[in-house]
Image 1 (cartoon, one colour):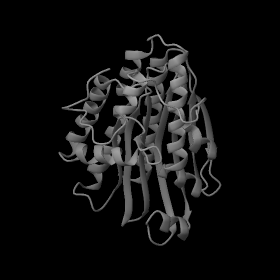
Image 2 (cartoon, helix red, strand yellow):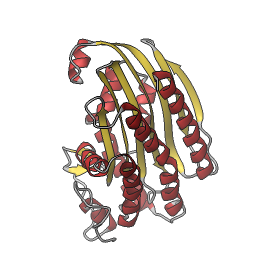
Image 3 (tube, one colour):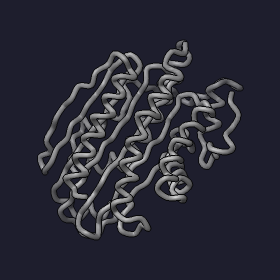
Length: 303
């Protein structure tokens, strides 16, 4: 396993996911924007606007260069120096408010033989929480995790709950998923097994999301649900611009701004001191945006 083989596998993953999403959408086609990073490397940004996916991005990048001491210390890496990073990052914003937003990222980072790691994860951000969908979604992730290590699902589910948390709102971004970072030399699994797990996470994305898309893409909705969708998208924007470490890393290392901010929705909204109607689906959803819900064996009741 080499850096070059990881790059080739991530490029193939991007191709496979784009093909699956085009088939699921039925109308949209990805437009590719190949780019080069002035400091070294580049990538392929792909964006789709379709019948079911209002805006979606599937990005591949492979960048290298020098990491400043300030940036290295901010990332708790010690001294700066040469770095290499590659990965695939996805965010999909559906047209129908009953269909959830989804995010996936798989990545590899390396500075030297002692400073390397894999990271990534998948998390789901429904505008409206369907507990049965959240349970099924978490089961797909648990299956992938259990194939690698018996502790991974519980460990990475907790990590996702803590990471995808909008602190200034005291609510989770969605129903969580799994999140892992810096899986490197300190882990019990060898590097090859960590790589296999990371790639398997990426390959789980397409069948998982296309199923959720199929479940709700044809559900009817009104202006009320669209207004709520814009408010929930606003929360998504707040998290990505205020708390997301990947966004900060990309901007600090002079990454491509358009690719980094691809995750933002086409339309979002904010309403001063908004409160949902009592006993509504909107209020029910807010009540489920909490950490540590056992989605596998003890999911909350449906609305």
